Length: 186
Image (cartoon, rainbow, N blue to C red; front, top):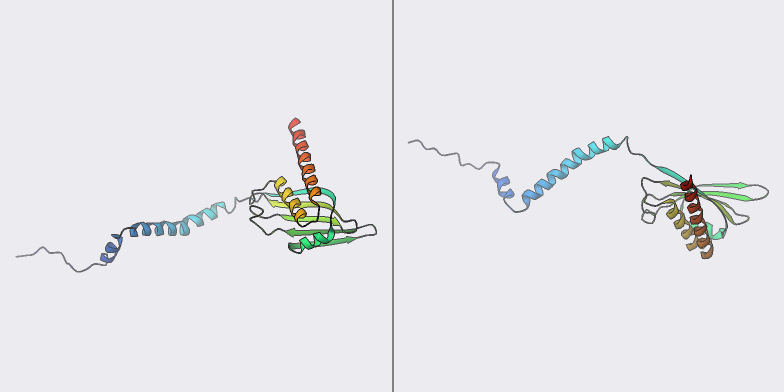
């Protein structure tokens, strides 16, 4: 009499079958599989596709301010900034200083922080120009918001008075509205 018995020796799949039967393990294995697939294939593929198409929308905004400032307070404020470059031009009439610094607080600037260039006269204590260099593809702020935050920083550091800061912001917003109306009329 021949017996039709299958070899009952344990196979290598037995531990896997017993582990998969436990609730949640199969789901965990599937999630690990998709995570590895994403890391090994999808992210590499996405980076190669977008490597040549990412465009940084750089924008520079220049404001001619001509406002009276407290130079010692400005120097104190600049001590806490990451200064990239500083130029001093002395002649017979005035002493111009151009300071370029990078803001570091990404939360405050809601994305990539701007680079700011200040040109001021130390002899007459006037801030002549402020230029903002923004990466528009990595920040969520408009040019008006950046300017307003900069003026607020100056007021908080007491480089300008609170009344001056309000006046500067109002003057800037009215000038922008007039420019927008002129463009709309054309």
